[in-house]
Image (spheres, one colour):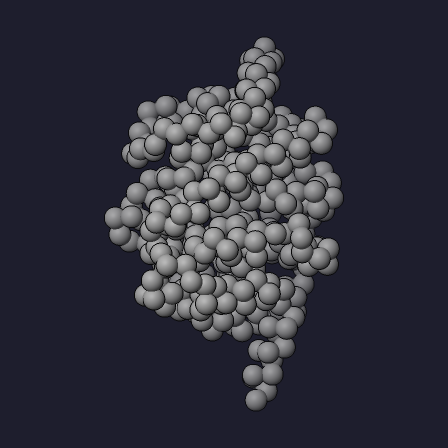
Length: 395
């Protein structure tokens, strides 16, 4: 009885999940008549939700024990964090992992750390050897569809990953939840951060702040946090106030390129996570296009509101064709210099990237509704070109 009381108390004190959303997902799994999602698919979704509920008491207890066992983590200062905010399929993961690879300057958060955001739990996983074994697990699974998805977005459980995983896998309140539960009517329940109460919004972002502090404590050094989140645009204004000295970086890519790649990946991702062929859902692609247009407007509005000292804009082509100088721009904006080792690493990365074969094909649709964003991307490209020229003149 005492053990049960402790576990229930821990769950009540733990900030996740966002229970209204979690319960709405249950409602859709049980009662949404979407014909493309079979009984077998729904069984898989039920198992996922039950598995989360089964693990939650232990995760909650570890989360709460962190404050008793490792209270020093709350003293960690998150200084000048770098937030990469852009449309998907625009080299955001590439830039994020490239910066995080400089482990003497930056730190990123790994997928397993987002999934199990507790110092105690991470130490348990490491000491028992589970962390090493789990780091070899492919996030997408082990089948032909997973192989193709992996080519588009390489992701193992020990890779540096998107902040969105905290909101997706712990809060159940993030756009990509729909890939695991592909009910179009669910969208208004999982992608409405701006409509949540101010108290709920702040609780979620304070939780994210605590997770970053915990991981910084685990790293054991005074490092700069580097983040990537393609779906945070409803949260960025609060983030700007929570991290007043943050640097925001965006990467633009013409809509024909990023949208065709995105639509291919999102269908593959949904299939890997849910087993559902979402191309059979009539509203799927129109929904995705609408979400991305809204995100495009939010991106432009947010970056226009920032001062020059708070932002950097890169174009996909110039970043991937000139990695070293583009990354050096981030360092310079932060008042840092590349070390000789990091400069050599980036030169080699330039060579590897230019020889890289993507290994997958996408369609070639045109997206007239993104004309405004393509104009923004062209302007960012000009500015990026000018920055690269200036950095070469200095040298």
